[in-house]
Length: 474
Image 1: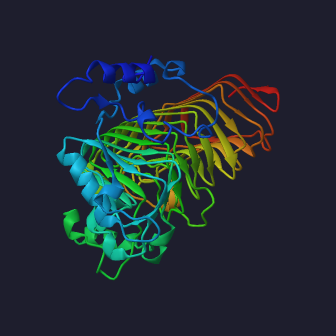
Image 2: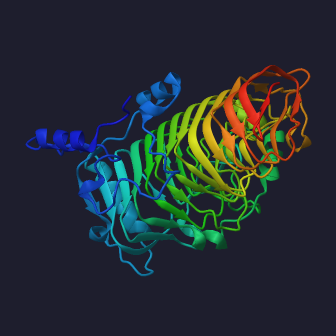
Image 3: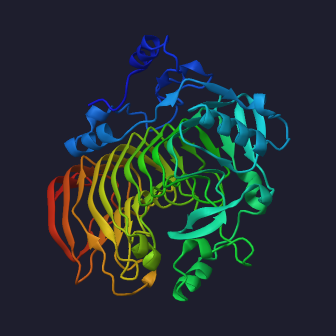
């Protein structure tokens, strides 16, 4: 089931309307041939060349088909025409001017040509694509004044903090594309801190309006994410390389119709909490053909934290992941721990785990957080997780409250390992069992301990499953 126009169809569409009075709209993710950047780097992803019609779940195919794709008008705006200069000059104003011009013209593609371009925060506007071309690097500045205070989230709590490097709020039909590099290393001078407790103290005092939870100038510091569309509809992040993150690398929040395609994130950084992609309170999200390096979770699906998460109460739902290479040090596919709004309908297919990634599936909450994860499906996920293939914990960080998470069903099909200490470590609660856990047609080799840890799980079912070549039933 196709999810987009083919390149030939897109070109044909453009030709058919070439004589129109307005510029012909083209699909940014399919029609990058008119710029110097390819649609996606050939090295990205796990190399399985998955088509949406190959997905083994009709429900996942339907999600992909229903996810709206960006449609950017065929106009170009080169940042050099707006005063941008490579080699160290501050280009924050030039980026803003080019994006504003494209938006006011009815939309278009802002071109970043080869070279090194220094900038502060870049804010996208509706119907605008920022295309970082081959040989182009955007180096984000260490000048904190170039990152205005915006509405964002810090670890699942809304607040006013310094802008992410690439940000959009309340925009529609936006894209970040190309084969160039975005480098956040320079932001390390100001982009630091993890004082979430300050936000929690404000909530405890009854400060429910996130616009009154202002971080800059408070004497407290919390990091800003790298790429964050917030409350946006129809978003594409494609092909770019993210380098030297200080915090979560891609964080679509309260968004609809998000496609992340052929992106490479940084696995080499020593900074903690540099998750690859964290969709939060978002619906219809596709993550495909990516090489997700991280010094934490590769993909962490989130939906808010504790009281503030219950105030917003929006789940992340309808997430499809395929043909990704997972290189992190926690979960390849993670649900939580900021999971108060719940996670529903996740499908991950043909992804490969490398490096020190601890779990193929990592699901985490507690009775303070609540929420939960329902209808989570993995098929043809391969590799060698270094702790267990699945880890589901209902007592994450030992925090306790009165909000029990809801778990299940969860299904693993056609999955495998080359080496893993344990396959399943899955624990529901006595008052909130995992409702359904199926493992089918899966072969786990190199299993160090064949005795799974399973408690408070209903509907556990094994069918055609082997550990170290021996049939296993549960």
